[in-house]
Length: 127
Picture 1 (cartoon, rainbow, N blue to C red):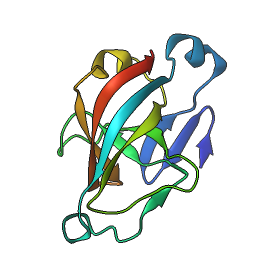
Picture 2 (spheres, helix red, strand yellow; picture 1 turned 90 degrees about the horizontal axis):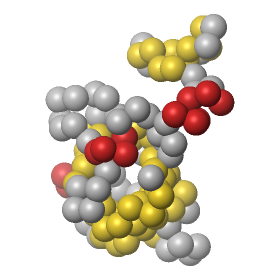
Picture 3 (cartoon, helix red, strand yellow; picture 1 turned 180 degrees about the vertical axis):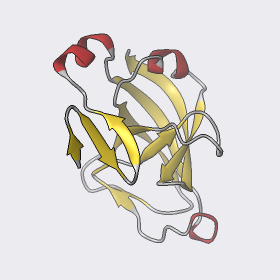
Picture 4 (cartoon, rainbow, N blue to C red; picture 1 turned 30 degrees about the vertical axis):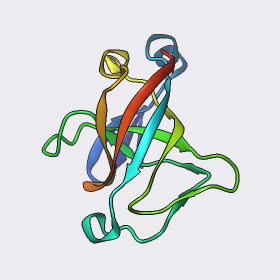
């Protein structure tokens, strides 16, 4: 739901990204290892494919501050629960994101509050 220049989603207030925000908060693209948890741990039974856009949590299980980001898998590839692979990920920018993304950094990959995988930065491609 749109209220003025703000988005409301699931009872949480999210700012609408304006063109001014783009100049200040650039997206960050990384090459990362993406490991999906087994279905018995995550509850996810289907593989991911194409450009999958889950939540990315850099601050731990009790923190609901997350960013969206697209995990881009090569054409025809699928990543099944319990597997891992290298992929390109583009995180939507927010103030302070560049400080959180560095080589070796791990974070939680989530669907809502449900943990489905872990990511690890191999290389920062664009800050």
